[in-house]
Image 1 (cartoon, rainbow, N blue to C red):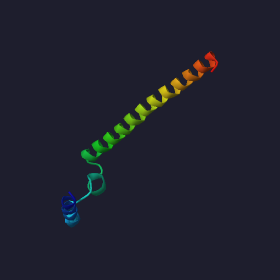
Image 2: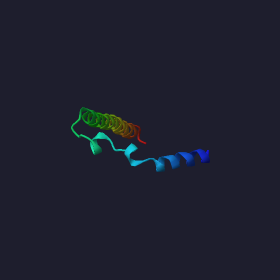
Image 3: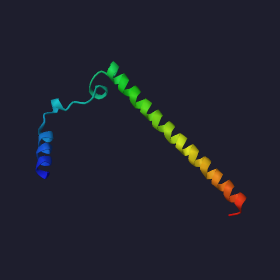
Image 4: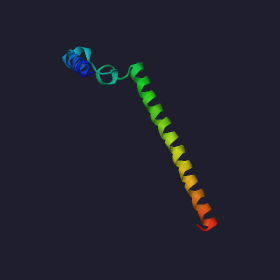
Amino acid sequence: MNRIAAILSAIALLTPARFASACGACYGDPNSPLVRGAIAAVLFLIVAVVSVLGVISRYAYKWKKRAEELAATEGL
């Protein structure tokens, strides 16, 4: 396994820079449809993750409040 990793590392390090070019946003046309689509996808994923985390935190806060109310009514 270590021999395979060493070979793959050597190949990656010896690859000419022209084959390892950057994406369209860094190296090419920043106004191309491909770059615009990638930016839109990243923004969508950020909004989706923040929305899900917001819902989870809202329910956690709601459950905490219910537990406090239950403990207060039971005299715990």
